[in-house]
Length: 207
Image 1 (cartoon, rainbow, N blue to C red):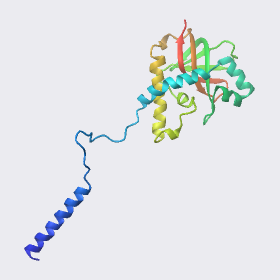
Image 2: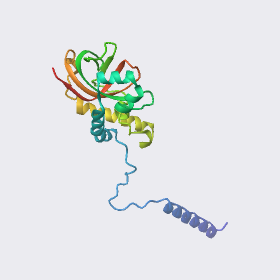
Image 3: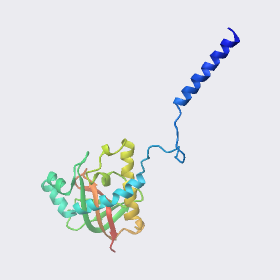
Image 4: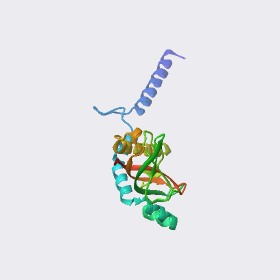
């Protein structure tokens, strides 16, 4: 093969490479953020933006605890329609009560509520860890389809829980609650009829 032929081949290869590089090159306008991509989901921002709405809906729907116990005993489906929403495991219900804190353990307090049967246990999460998805699920209009995947859906629940904790429980002295009277509005998933674990949207200590 002559040197002229070899030179021609190399020139052709170089031309092909340059064309390929050109096709694969993205032109970025001056001042554009070359690292910018799809906006990342922020559980913190989601929780902060959604919690006020969730707090309002749950507060507006909440039934006094004694009334809710009676309604569930009479007709669980009717009580769910009036005071909550259907859930995958059990209905998610909104409740409000005032009572005396009987005991606290690992961030969960048992509250003695007047006019509620002795067989009914009512507990409330006070943190620092707030678990579950009751706040997310309790309004009935936040669904898996609103998110890209299961991770985002779960993180949304955590973001809402954290926003509630900052807004509602930040000033609560958890070590001094026993014996105190508390006013609570919150939501719970009904799994065991006579044992409620309430996640609050409002929480105040009266005495």
